[in-house]
Image (cartoon, rainbow, N blue to C red; front, side, top):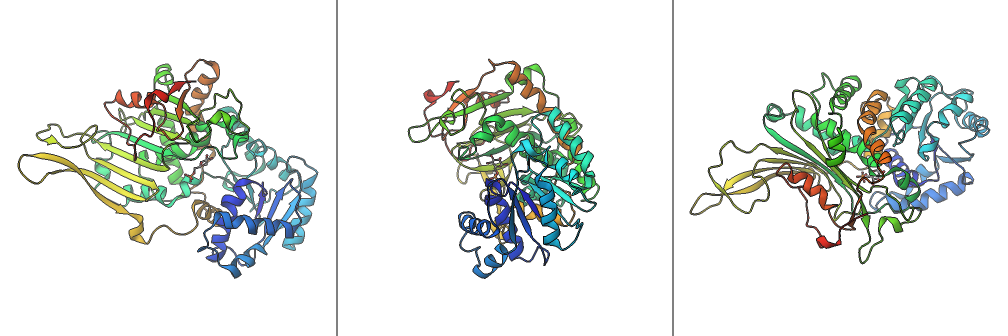
Amino acid sequence: MIIFGASGDLTKRKLMPALYTLYKEKRLPEEFVVLGIGRTAYADDAYREHILKEMDRFITPKERVEGTMMEFISHLCYLTIDPAKAEGYGLLDQRLQELTGEKKSDNLLFYLATPPSLYGVIPLHLKGAGLNRQHTRIIVEKPFGYNLESAQELNKVYASVFEERQVYRIDHFLGKETAQNILAFRFANGIFEPLWNRNYIDYVEITAVENLGIEQRGGFYDGAGALRDMVQNHLIQLVALTAMEPPAAFNADSFRNEVVKVYESLAPLTEEDLNEHIVRGQYTASSTKKGYREEANVAPDSRTETYIAMKIGINNWRWSGVPFYIRTGKQMPTKVTEIVVHFRETPHQMFRSKGGAGKEANRLILRLQPNEGMVLKFGMKVPGPGFDIKQVMMDFSYSELGGLPTGDAYARLIEDCIQGDPTLFTRSDAMEASWRFFDPVLRYWKEHAEAPLYGYPVGTWGPLESEAMMHEHGAEWTNPCKNLTNTDQYCEL
Ligand code: BG6
């Protein structure tokens, strides 16, 4: 496995811990080498030491088994080259020959964990050096492209170097056990599917928010923003899992065909949607924490969004008229990823409800993180006189099944790629269909400098305007904990 960007953040934070987990659980081939590539100079030993030190920050002491860790580390080596330049690829070929003992081994897996600007360059250099061999695979990180046009360009580059079966566009949300469980929940149970449509569902909310800022990623993030970082990939994948038709079989083609169908059915955004059904925000300073514009490598007058909420429609028989409200944000009060399916109210409300907020109807919450599990909410009579109804919960927690397997989404996805299973990776047509839908938003923001960007103080649930968008539907966002700030601290930027 050859990792480009081996001295970077993703490698130490996610890839090495995932590979270590796979190694510890004997899910890697007996003989393997991980060759890190980067511009930062390291000798093999120095790189091993560096990773060993970093490992402690990203795996728990319980996960670390000393002997196994040292064995795993001994499989790592490093080559200092500039991946942007063709010159280094001859050295790479030579190093691979030494490591594999073969002149033209094609049992190679390339992983592109570099800045996105290199995603189009590296494959061409691999081709130039004859490293795009028949069984070779390549994993490419997100964001794949910057907009529709650049994604199409990238797809063309990949198609000129590899066959589609060799290209694995990774979106780690699909590697999450709980995301896959949405499919199991929907398609392994008979009782929900008959209700899973516009006749019984009023609206769907999808939230993926975090209580961290952009950390050390200002350079990348300021040019990307929440739409490219989270929405065009992770959130829309969750929309697809929630909205898709049952695939004919659970294999790569059937599953990915259904994903594409959802993307192609997304109702194109109108001028009204762009104006009124998209709210973008940027976090501003609180008494203890920096605002976005004060972060390192962020322009002091940046208009990059760190929050976005959108109303999305799906034009098909199942979902016509059912809005999907999606939102993501940095520096929110908590970290939570969940899907809330709001069922329609009963046609006639005979009883009084007690202590309920918003509409009193059944709700199903699929929680991806934390406290992974699901909750079904329904009304019950409050004991005693009268006939008051209270919403109660029936809940299931993953911990009851022994918890989630060790290693996270990355371990699962790297293993799938090694085994040649692309089901949980994004196909080129899905990538383009998703960009096609979001492209008008990017264009609109570019062409309308005056389009509002709302400030929200660190630790709050985002701009108040996103609440107003929900109120239009007579609803409110489901916030797992309360707002922490006074409303007068909000402003337009
Ligand atoms: C990444 C984004 O893809 O997903 C990050 O680039 C974000 O900005 C992260 O923090 C969230 O992933 P998770 O698995 O921690 O919810």
